[in-house]
Length: 440
Image (cartoon, rainbow, N blue to C red; front, side, top):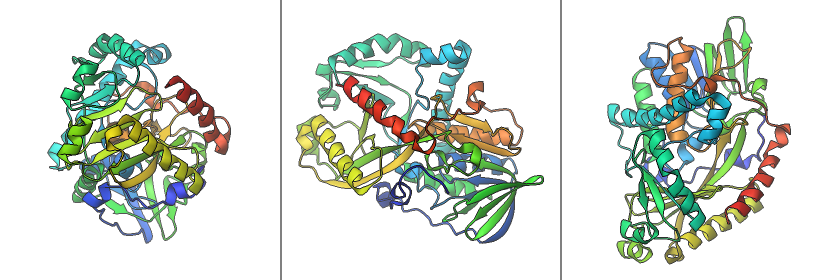
């Protein structure tokens, strides 16, 4: 396997709080030779959603994961089931792909949230769901002006009426902090991603999906009319293969994937349970999921058990020194935004890899010149909803069915390569520096 970060980014044990609430069920290692209709590489939200759709359509599906299913981004994210998946503005998307495609994308965003909502309900998954939509909080007076200017566009785009929150109303709404107002869009909800993933895995296995852990794909090779996936202790012969590895992909599985994705670190801390009096002192008592208006945004929420989750984009390296510096930085930012909680203990801290694409839109479709090979990836930090939805829609593509929900044509366009090859994460340094200046 060829990956572009230091090995620690792919090997660090998952010490996140979710594992305390829902320990993963260890799946067996793939041993010996297996035959299946569709092999899925990657056991996160995308892979399991694809497998679930395939199995319900009567197609045999086998899922393998380099670690345990859910070990990567699906078990490390902040649990925001919300709009998003692309980093393009609406205007830029319309200029690049046309107004109709922009409208189709926004329908897809909503459909992705509804998709997860239906999965939780239909499969009776208790994932500690809370929050009525998501709230964007202004970190400067200028940012609040921009929020006010965007209100009508948000209403036209998503067909809902956003709620403006003035600065003086924040504390009484339980959103007390160093903010200048905000806007709530009543679409989406927060959840415990470990419980969601565990429910997906159980639902997939119940309809015949085979799951294997500790089984990294070392190679995928086309042999006649089938694909052969090789792991350290076994092989899978499959008619078709789905790549669902996102930011944890490898440059050579297959070689086509080289430089077509850019992993980006994201970090999270979680506090001990914060008492009611401590919540009142800060003025933050709401269970609303929130993020701020910075380019290098922070995302945060109070969880049902009183713990507070706080996340931000990570560093550029996974070395011990870089991780220590990032640990200091996330704590400093947390204390700046929530100064009354400076002495609250941090009980858990972890990081993971999200995935950017050069065109700033996800990819979900057939891999060119590789018959029977498909991929879905590149959710730009919003994979709970979009990764789930595109996994399901890609499965329909694999079996030749039309999509059962909105799906813009541009999502199936092959992703372009980033410059600099294996050194492409160096592109993040100037971008981060510029964003830091802009965010002041």
